[in-house]
Amino acid sequence: MSWNLKDKLQKTIAQEQGTVIFAPGSRESFALIYPNTYHVGMSNLGMHIIYQKINSRGDTACERVFLPDKKTEQEYIRTNTPLMTLETQRPIYEFSLLGFAVSFEMDYFNILKILSLGKIPLLCSERKENDPIIIAGGPCATFNPEPLADFIDVFIIGEGEEVINQLLDQYYSCQGENLTKDEVLLRLSKVEGVYVPRFYVHSYNEDGTISKIETVNGVPERVNRRWVRDLDSHLANTVIVTSDTEFKEMYLIEVARGCGRHCRFCMAGYCFRRPRVRSLNKILDAVRQAKNLKAKVGLMGAAISDYPYIDELCETIINLGMGLSVASLRADSLTNKLVAALAESGQKTITLAPEAASDRMRKIINKGISDEHIYQSISQAVKAGILNVRLYIMVGLPYEQDSDITEIIHMAENIKKYMEKLGSKGKLTLSINPFIPKPSTPFQWLPMDDMKKVEHKLKIIQTGLKNKKGIEVLVESPKEAYIQGVLSRGDRRLGSVLMQSHKLGGSKHFKKVLKEHNLQEEFYLYRTRTREEKFPWQTMNIGFDDNYLYQELQKAELEKFTDPCVQGCVRCGICKKE
Figure 1 (tube, rainbow, N blue to C red):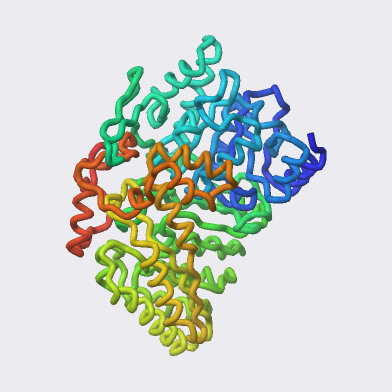
Figure 2: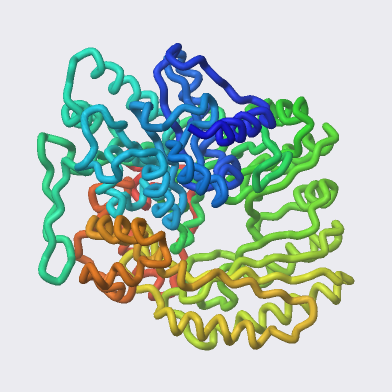
C-alpha cells in the first residue's frame, strides 16, 4: 500500500466542498466510477446527480473513483497498490457494487484499465461469487451496451435517478436470502430499465449480422428505457464544488433535459425524449445555493436558449450579482437578454452549432436554422460586446456532396466579413468533427464516410482557410472518430478486441487487433444496413414506434423537414405510450 497515493487522495478531498464521507462499515458501500480523470469526471453533472441520490438513501455510502493520471498510475503499478476510492481510500475490490458512468466510447479502454488497476478480473465469466457486481449506466450504456457485455454484469438503460434506488432495493433484499450471484443478477434483471447481458444470447449469420437474440430464465425480451417524468422531483445541480474541473469555480444547474428539435444525427435528441424543463422556482433555488458558494452559474441542457423562462432566469442571476455560462445555444432562439447576461458575465465567445453550411445539408439533418439566424445571433453578440464566434461543424454527413464542403469555406469567409462589418476584430473558430452514425437515430442504417475521403475534405477546408486572418480551424482526430464509429454500432464480438487491445496498451492497437480477430472495420463502418437487419442494441427499447426512425431516414433522403415536438404530439410514439 502506497501512503503517497493515500495522501494524494486525501489532499484532493481537502480541496472540495460538499463531499460526504461515512465511516467504513456504517453503511453499505457503492463505488461510483468515472472512467476518465478526476478533472473530466467531476465536470460531469450525471456523476453529481447519482452521488447525491445514493448518499441520500440512508443505507448506502457512495464513494468516487477516477482514472489516475499517468504519473499516479505508475505509482499504483510500482507499489502494487490496488486502485482506491477517493472518500475512504479503500481498494475498489472490497466493494460489492461498482458502478461506471459511461459517456464516451473511447472510455471503454479506461474501464478495463480501472478494473485491472483495481485487481478485479476483467471478464464477467472469470469473476467469482465474492467479486464485485459491475454496473454501467450513462449514454453509452443506453444506446448500445453490447461491446462491453463481456465485462459489465448489469446495465442501466436510460436515466438513472429512479432506477438506481430500485436496483439497490432489489440487491439488498437478495442479500439475506443466500442467493448465488447468478440468482441475484436474475432478480435485478426484473427491474424495469435493467439489462443483464448474460441472459440474452446473440447468434450470428455467416456474414456477421445477428440472426437472433434469445432470452433465458424468463427475462424480458426488451428492456424499456427509463426516463424521469417530473424533473422537479430530482435535484440536478453541482453537489461537490472543486476548482479542478472543466468548469472551474462554476456551479452547474440542469434547466432542461431532452430535445424536441429532431436533428437526425443527434443521439441525445432521440434517446432522451421527451423534452422536459424544470420549473423556474426550482432552478432559482439552485441559483441561490450557487450564490452562497460564491460560484458562477453554469446552465446545462440540450439547448439553453430554448428554455421558456430563459430571460427571467438570466435577469435574476445578473440582479443577484452573479455570472453565468451556458452549455449550448440555438441560433434561432437566442434572446437579447440572454446574450446581454453572457456579456455581463465576461463571456468572450458565442458558440453556435450550424453543423452544416449548406441549406441542403441542414434539411437532410433536420437542423432547422438558416444563415439569417446565424447572422442575427452574431449581430446580437457583437452588439453586446461578445466579439469571438465559435461554430461546430460536421463533415462526412449522409448524402454530402463536394459542394457542401466548399460551402463551409464560403460560410466561414462570409461570417468573418460580417463580423468585421459589425466592427468586431474577434476570432472565428470552426470546430470540425467527422460525423459518426449513432444507434437509435435515423442514420443508424447508413455507412460512415470513408476515412480517406473525410481526411481529404478536412484538408480542403484547412487549405481553403489557411491564410484567412482571424479564422481558426480545429479538427478532431479522424482516427479516433473511426474507433468510436466501430464501438458505437458494434456487437459483442468486440469484447475480445477490447480485451486484447487493453493487454497491448490501449486504443492505439484497436485497429490491428480487430483484423487479428477476423473482424473487418468495413463491416462496422462502411456498409448500409438493410431495413430488416437485427441490430446488436435491438433489445433496448427506446420507446419509438417501430417505423418511426426509418421514416425519418426516408425524409432525410428527400430533404424533408420534421417539425419540433409540441404538446399533444404523438408522432414518434413516446408520448403516445404515456
